[in-house]
Length: 378
Ligand SMILES: *Cc1c(COP(=O)(O)O)cnc(C)c1O
Image 1 (cartoon, rainbow, N blue to C red):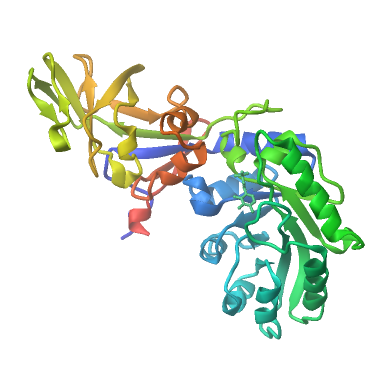
Image 2 (image 1 turned 45 degrees about the horizontal axis):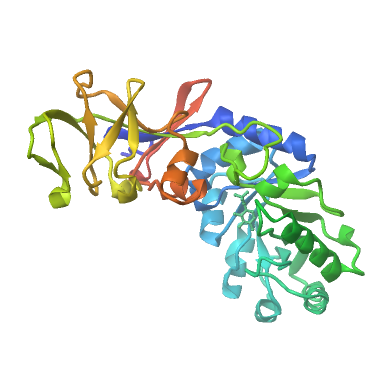
């Protein structure tokens, strides 16, 4: 028996697939690119890879991208006919595993290409990565680029079909972006880029902020597909709608008196008679200890978390109106992912990626529940 589409605890994430679809379609229209990768690495930034991939593909994305081969293989079990690119480095000895599942891979430097040379398995599609200034992976100059192209062209079973780079600055520095563009031009000078079927450069920030780059026919859409802005330092050309919300329910309400203390370390001391509500979510769910003192919302009203966040449970200071069974919103349209990120001195990416797979995901369309994913029961 599988419980994969059920759950038995009162804590869950809701993902609004209509909002994801809307974000994809708006950004696709804005950017005007023919090819749009939906970036669904890290379990689609915590939203659920297969579910988000399907919604994004329905809405106008035509390809999928992830960081690691394992992620690509998981997607491929469910989604057959769409290109899937592993943007990160894979081990040369794993090329056959990728190719057998029709997964596109990245050649990121000459040493890797040398190790891959002579590959004789099922033909693999390869995208060459240029490091234009992020200084993560990729070839860094014209000489390496030309050599990489020549070496790959000489391989019968490695098909060089794509070229890409990655931008380091979402915000502030337009100058760094411009420098990266110039670097791409310098590195590829003398090569007709139409030899590549796919040339893709932009992440969310560049898709939203900058016009199409020369000789480029695609982009890679990550954070903004989820309705989260890559930065608050530039004006968005279209509205983004947060698709992710996090919920729990009150399991107990109790009255505490002056001098009582709450939670591990007894760090919260009760000053006047008050009510405390307990909810079944904690840091093992990715609701990190840093969330201590932050607000949650119950029946439209905000209440503070008190005491330390435990591994599985968290206490909230409530009032007489709050009952056992009441829904608690930890992230919603009022308690935004962006606000949580700001409070925790981090970025919205990290908040959603942190919510662990112990929390079931509930998918919604037209405001109605359409499916559930509970990774406790894979
Ligand atoms: C994660 C990633 C993206 C997506 O970036 P967003 O800022 O989330 O849009 C694009 N390209 C590469 C190479 C990435 O690693």
